[in-house]
Figure 1 (cartoon, one colour):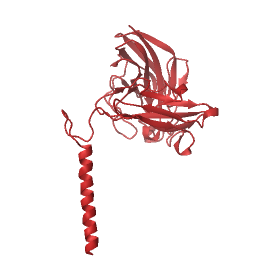
Figure 2: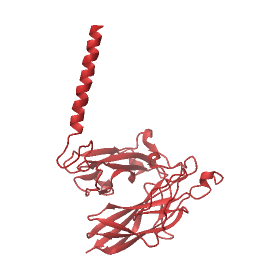
Figure 3: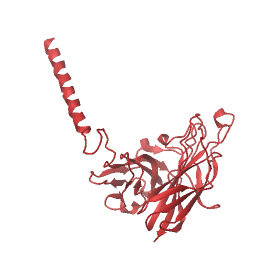
Figure 4: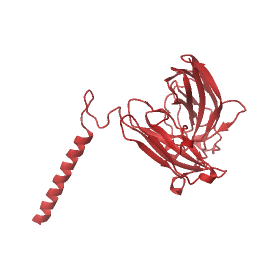
Length: 310
């Protein structure tokens, strides 16, 4: 009994020492900062493979997102030695501007049918941090994602740039066929059209009214800052409830909610420096009870190309 008691005492002491060592490792105060487990800046951006979608033509779309661990700032990493995809032929489609926190299904890489078993890698190096990289594979069914209607019928919204033009859905979405032009510092109106094609049971009390669609604009890539201001035609909504009866996040300058689940929405952007930019518009129906980013459903990415002149 004494031997067992002595062993338990040693184990307890070992755990206490390990806890103290771990605490001192992760909670060291830094000059000019409050004591905390996670400093607000200087942390890496981590690439994430969300999974893959099978396409009708036999190709596959590998979906990527990321986690920007910096709680206080966005991060810009241009395409190059610190932000690249291998093989090189797929490089250049990834974002260079990283929003704060976890961003799901930001873009996809399409592997042709005859190369669907190939492996691709997204590499990111943030500042002095080590390189973070993730493989994109379509070999495991465990990572296969589907685009089937959710339990209450929710599917990805439709989105397009021009009336009568091409439409896009889902993370692969749509890239604009034309490029907008504007001078640095001048205002540019960015417009998209959308509609929710979901078929739901309207006798369900949650779906007697249309499910609101939310649109969020953000810089995807480009050399300078992009500032968004509210368009005068944007709806002025104080509160919108989702199908769970919870208030949705209030609209901001770069966010618009369409309560009728369809319509046209615009935002005004200004660009600080000349160069080539891409603006991403994410359209989601997360107000529906069967829709959420964590379920990899249901949102659509639109990518608008902009050239900014001096």
